[in-house]
Length: 228
View 1 (cartoon, helix red, strand yellow):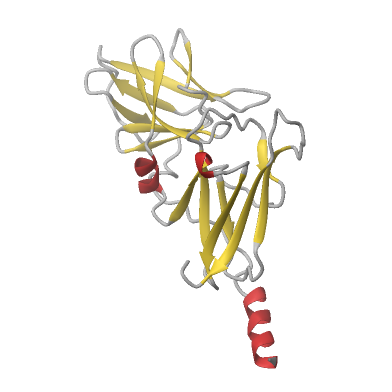
View 2 (cartoon, helix red, strand yellow):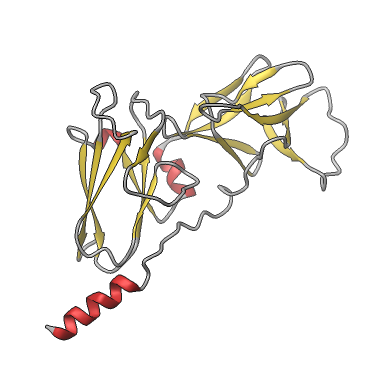
């Protein structure tokens, strides 16, 4: 028994910090005041920066400069020399995947592929399979899988595991946050359970801890399992 307790204590101390390693292309972010070019003929996006020696835009190309809106929401806006455009479905984060511009909305927990039709920046929601390719080692948890706003998940004993909430419903999660996770995540719906989590973990995803029926509280219980 003493050896078991010593081992469990070691597991608690070691690996207590866990941070998901976001790789390319998710980290290939379009930042505030950076510019991108959209080619309406090939439907491709290109980054423009100080190291880019790209020629002046052709008649088929439109140059956009990104700005993050001030105040609540932190939405992305893409401006040309004479017009302002919302980045699709209220995007809050965008990255380049090759010549595709991918957007994430932290308030709806959805991913989109962006294009430009000459009048507005359009957004096509990504499939679960497409999102999974960007996070191959993450367990995607669809909102539709919750029953009465609760869900039970498992992870393997003494192994860390990353999960991500992905919204496949019409529910809005504006200003929702995890009550008992302090670490910042690039993708708001991401949460991680460290390998030293011996007891089951209950996470609460809520709108400022509100109990208002307009803002339902979502509970996520993660248990250890030998099967993972």
